[in-house]
Structure formats: C-alpha cells, structure tokens
Image (cartoon, rainbow, N blue to C red):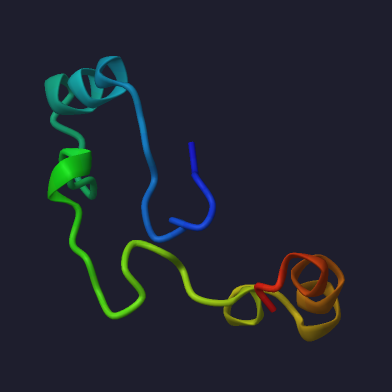
Length: 67
C-alpha cells in the first residue's frame, strides 16, 4: 500500500515480503521503515504537480496546500 505523502515507497506486510523472497522474485528491495532514506524533501513526495496533470493537481492540491 502507499501512504501519502510518501509515494516514493510501497509498503507491505511481512507476509508479502516472505512470499517474494521464498519465490526468489526479483525487482524488490525491502527496507525497514526506520531505515528509509531521507532526502531534501524528507520522506515526502514533494508536490502533487510532480505526479498529476496540472488540472488534477490543482483540484486536489489547492485545498490542501500541496499543489
């Protein structure tokens, strides 16, 4: 699942992590929440306009102050 504003990360339960590892599936990196890399934006995603078309970003972002 995803937690706004931390859209750079996909969170999962340990049962899913164990399934992926047991099947030797590739493409996933598992990091404990306390070890997540902090950037200039902290753990946040930045602004909605970085992820949505301008009209949609305004619609949802303006009322929340995150456009």
